[in-house]
Image (cartoon, rainbow, N blue to C red):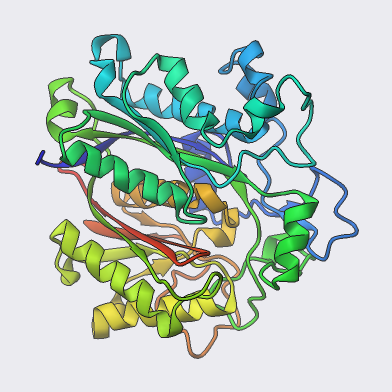
Amino acid sequence: MAGKVVISGMGIVSSLGYDLETFWKNLVEGKSGVKKISLFNASSCATQIAAEVPHEFEEYSRCLVKKRAAGQMTRVTRMCLVAAKQAVTLSGLDFEKEDKTRCAVIMGVVNTGNSSVEKDTSPQNTVFKSMTNSMPAWISLEYQLLGPNFAINTACASSAYAIAIGMQMIKNNMVDVVIAGGADSIINPEEINGFNALYALSVANDPPEAASRPFTSKRDGFVIGEGAGVVILESEEHALMRNAIIHSELAGYALTSEGYNIMAPMKDGAGMAATIEKALQNAGVDKSEVGYLNAHGTSTELNDRYETMAIKKVFGEQAYHIPVSSSKSMIGHTIGAAGAIEGIITILSLKNNILTPTINYSDPDPDLDLDYVPNVSRQKEIHVALSNSFGFGGHNATLVFRKYPGN
């Protein structure tokens, strides 16, 4: 088994920015990316708000995605490729100097976004736009990589699974480098109406910025977000050999299935708690070392209640001293991209010693009594942090990150 696995690059496309610096600045300032839906006329939908990627992204992406290839991609696939290219650039990797058979691409993909709102779909490109393997395929094509290249679908935990499996492939000495992450958008009438029928989405349309309210008594469902998050994973040995800047260590993970319900989490957060416990064991981390937890924190009744219960079950009295925040309060729920985007936020928190807030935190739920970093960011030096992702179908993932020496 190889030694440590580290993160040497990160890329982001989100409602709060499509470069890492802008994204982080807006998060730290507690800004919301949630607005009235502009991708289609949502006036007939019960939910009329979402955290959309700014329209200016399309112009930005033209500089990074070749025109012919872009015409065979959905808007979401372009987001994925752009985030991957950002991550590769930040990492300083030159694939012409790498053994390309030992470079992998793993993406969490729930869907490609080839929905009723996708523009310019034709008989000539509909197959390419709909292929769920298209995101990792385009990234591999971009760099002519020859290693494993595949997509994973485990609902809202998809990109966390991608990162975890990438780590394991490095640990098993199958590859040296993994481009891992995911992208998603379900901002379309068919999926919004479907989630409304399940009473899963917020219908607090006015003002949009206040709709995502994790851990509060007035939470009424999640707010859809969209975007992409990609990280570069390497063995520490490989990264040091090429003098890479290392942003964090990925210390461990857990992937579990609840085998309980297609939609609802296991009662009292038992499955969530088991996942967190296994992740700590896998990482060799003592509970006392954990200084922050980036919660799944969807702003739904059961998730927020059960995730809070799970944290208390795992950490006991210490749970009250671990700051917990939900990025979804600002960027919405990015579905297949959530694990990667929130993993990147966790890495940036470790690097910068800043905990991003849970905004819209008023009217606390008296049963949910942890430190949710309410409304404003907080300076705090942390050395170990967790990121939770839990998906429909009982797909659970927890990633464990450790501050890298020198950061």
